[in-house]
Structures are given as structure tokens and as C-alpha cells.
Image (tube, rainbow, N blue to C red; front, side):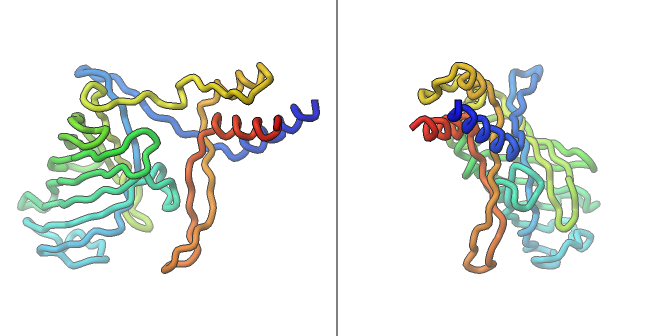
Length: 241
């Protein structure tokens, strides 16, 4: 009984630290899709043609033919210290005389994704204001042969532009993988049937936050995800040992 109380206390502590995160599956007349939603932090654009140079946010200074090269962090949430999934690297060309549209060509590099490794290639002209839509034309790794589209809009412009971007990919066009949190989980250490049921039914993750020492910028906040069932399995196993 004392051991069960220890386990219950540990579970309560973990649940207090939880942050929910779930993928989205959508329906489409052209087939089943999976939607990946991330936030792009636009902090490293460099104007190289007819532009004001690095560090400025005066987009009105750009004109027809202006070219931007960008290398942006892609994170799970809009916060600067949110979990880093990868990077968005590419170019943008102002392709109309009115100075309102950009032709985008970029690659999203998934370096730390929980399910997928590889890249997505996105290309097209962003038109209008508000939600924009351009094509996903391919990819590498798990996304080899991927097809779909990407929608995006400005999430905030303070303290710098942050873009909320969705990637809607047709499941039959790439190496689709079911959500691992929805796969039955077997924990050999769990001796109590009730505890086994609790562990296998959970579909949440722990987001652990800490400070890391950057050799150039000092202490910086960081975070990572922890699969809850796996964590609880190890916790219970240590209590039973």
C-alpha cells in the first residue's frame, strides 16, 4: 500500500507539469491528410537586392525584384523558448510591380520532430492579406514524394514577426506514421491492473523546461518533450525495484 501511495504521489507530480500537444488529422476531397502546425520565428532575414540590409523591419523600402534570404527557427509553440522542431530556409522574391506579393521558395528541415525526419519543399506566390496558401511540392526522408499545401498567417509582429504555418500533407504521398501516443503501450513493470490501464490510456506529454548555458549568450531557457507513458513506466519500475 505504501508503494501505491508513492506511485500516486509521483503521478500527481507529473500531471501538474503536463502541457497538452496533439496532432491534427483532417479530411479532404482529394484524400486523407495530416496537418502539422508550427510557428516560424522571422529573426534572420537578409535583404540582398534593392533592400535596406539586415536588421530592419521596414518592408516598405523593398520594391519589385527585391530578394530576401531567410533562415528561421521553427518551433511547436509561439514562445521563443518553445521546443525547436527544425528550420525554415529559403528565398523570397518580390514578383509584382505593386510591391505586394512575394514568390516563396523554401525548405523546412525537420531536425527534432517526434515522428518524422527529412525536409518539405514549399513553393508559390503569396497573394493578398490574412491567410495565405502555397503548394507543398515534395520532400526528402520521410517526406519523399510529399504533396499538399501550406497555409500561414502572421501570428504576431512583436517583438518580431512570428508566422503560424500549417502543412497539410496527403497521407498516401509520404511515409505517414500514426501518432505514437495512440499506439498501445506495454509496460512490463506495472504490477497493478488499474495503474496499467491509466498508463496505456494517457495521450499527453510532459514538457520539461530548464536553463542551458550558451557559450556566447550566457544562460538561456530551453525545453523538450518527454513521453508520459514511458516516463511513468520507468518511474513505477524504480519504485518496484
